Image (cartoon, rainbow, N blue to C red; front, side, top):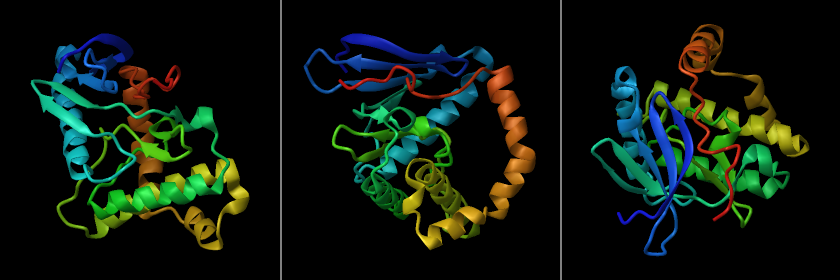
Length: 220
């Protein structure tokens, strides 16, 4: 890779995330560098980056997710997706959420569950008004599409529908409202026990909130 101007998007205990403008004039790329992680967090950082790399490989034929360019020597390179985070763009067009649902179905058809779609910064609105998804560090590719896969996929769907409820709730269908009323047992158990512990560790102890430049993201 022939790097040019490098813009730091975030730094935490798991390393750095930067936006790199290439000297060859091609579109910018994103670099996740786990070599900059704290020594005691380096193993976890590489595990998270490896999960992202595996998921992006599986999604290489799916539009609306970054393209994996390289994962080696502790650095992950992926394509930059132009767009604004959901909390900035505030999509109110039902067409956006119809396309977001199609994107989610394609991800699940490829065997990938995202596991972090409750975060609005992980949803982008492209310049054409289309949805895109970033940050696959917590994603998973279960070996079997059994009960666990279905529960995780269901929670991905519920998180998308929660966003739809926030921005154009009057366009929720009756079936979508029923889904919102019924969290999976996995989700309910996580909310009661795992989530408070996760938030304490990641936010209070580690200061981690991977938003890929959500506060200052701009179009190239």
